[in-house]
Amino acid sequence: MVRWLLRTLGLAVLVAATLSAVISAIALCSDSLTPSSDKPPPIVGLISLHAIAALLGLGLRRLGTSDRSNRASTTPLHLRDADYLQRRQEFAASLERGDVPSLPAHGHPFNLVAGEQLIWLFPYVEYHRTETGSEYVGGNSGFSIRVAKGLTWRVGSFKGKRVQRREVKFVDTGIVGVTTRHIYFSGDFSKFRVPLEDFIEFSAVDENGICAQRDSDPDEAEYFMNGDSEHMLLVVRWATHLARSVA
Image 1 (tube, rainbow, N blue to C red):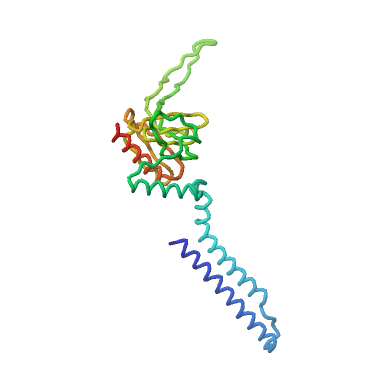
Image 2: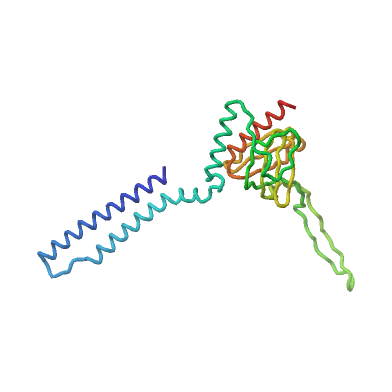
């Protein structure tokens, strides 16, 4: 709404500046034909005023359209691919018909288990993982007392309290494959396969991706980020439901 108002206001300022410039030009021409005083018309001042107004209008229009261009430039490439978007629609349509969507069993880096079907491939996925570490806080190095030459005695040093901290760390970028039984990940430095039944919850992380929690360690979360949280959440939840129903 604010962007629309800025664009509209900018257009209005540009139109007003143009009309004002035309009217001033007509008035100046009339004054030059019938001069009423020896003082020259303030042409330079009027031109400067109209130029400032025009620049102001252009600036407001730029503000109104910058958000749209920024969104386009930050949209992941696969979400601007017409074929990818078409396959998304076909996937949703197959679910509505009650069919099991499937992709060809080739053209990917995964070693599928016999009997499972590849449902979807997500490209350009950033894999992050929550890790728990510990550190000492509130410690003090104390101070040293010289007892003899080459001999010191440190007094008052202590490590402090040991506390646990949890942080999300980037692991790798790669391809995520979702099958009727597993979630696969293949990157440059990390490759793994996890049974869908091992996950207890999937949740969206804004529009960027999903958060997955395993039954074995629910406090540790994994994040699959590719800018397509809506479709990724639909695929993994449906595949997990299918895997549990046939188990």
